[in-house]
Image (cartoon, rainbow, N blue to C red):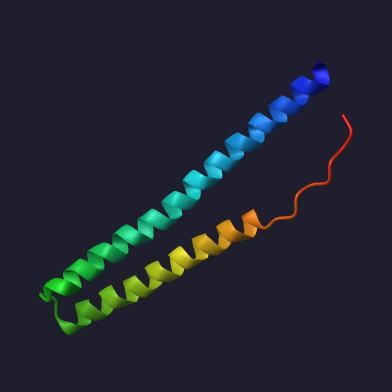
Length: 88
């Protein structure tokens, strides 16, 4: 019974870790997406001068890079090799 409790505790911890990771990845993606959307909407309005437009485009490219990085990190964790089973 003690071994079962330890396995159950480890499983619950792993699930909590996975939920936290998913929440963090979601935040890492939503934040640059919000910035990207704002900059694109402002560009769409066309009220900025050329220097401000250039800044917005630079931020948009940075936001896309941040999103790609977050997705790459999530993919790397997902592809991590599973641990070999152990006797309990």
